[in-house]
Image (cartoon, rainbow, N blue to C red; front, side, top):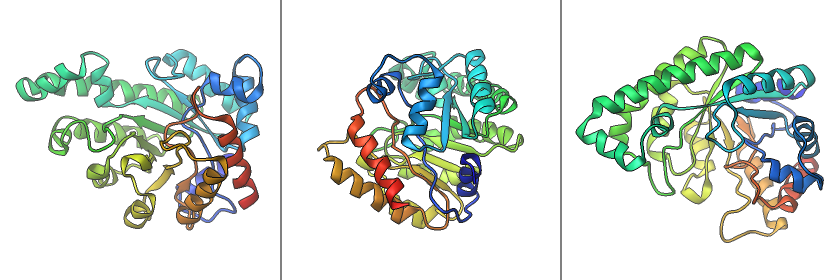
Length: 296
């Protein structure tokens, strides 16, 4: 079974010999620390993916996000991964909330939700149109799945109230999701923070999975798995830099616990909540992924 097949089985909630593993981003700074040399490009990222034993790779189609690219180079990168590997390829596109914030500051955005909601609705409509176009281009280039990234929350609650989200964001999020799904690609949703209040909304829209599940923000993997795990693939929940900082043996034990609690019956992909950044401790990441190979 190759990497792509393993991820597909997890998304389809089918039994697999091991749970798939993947990171939503891997920064050049992290790769340099892992390999011990200056970052030279995609070949170094591939070497890192192989060293960690990952099964999927993410290409971010938004230059405003860490490691993100404009659409044309993102398409070329997807084609590169598709030609050279059997990794499952995810394309990350910006959602209607974040897409609106690309145009106006957050404080002004919040005021407009009260004083001029039609302006926000138009921003959301344009952002949804853009994300659909970019996602479909990525699928045609070889992406197997799509992530709509829309950081809706802080550590305690959503940044806009759930009723406001349901009025000015979620209708366009659902329209975008339904259009992308017609390509046959599964669509995941990404948001850091505490999104417990709106998980049911995301499930009802028809997302195939959710990424991040940030435990320090109150996202309890065991509870979410029990409530939504039959139809939703859960990806993430591992934090390498949460405070208080854990030791490598503690993180290794935590990784085994996460897999033991969530991997049964498929519908689970192991990975960190926020990706591997310049500040992520390399020894902790290597230790965790080595332990998962032993555990598997």
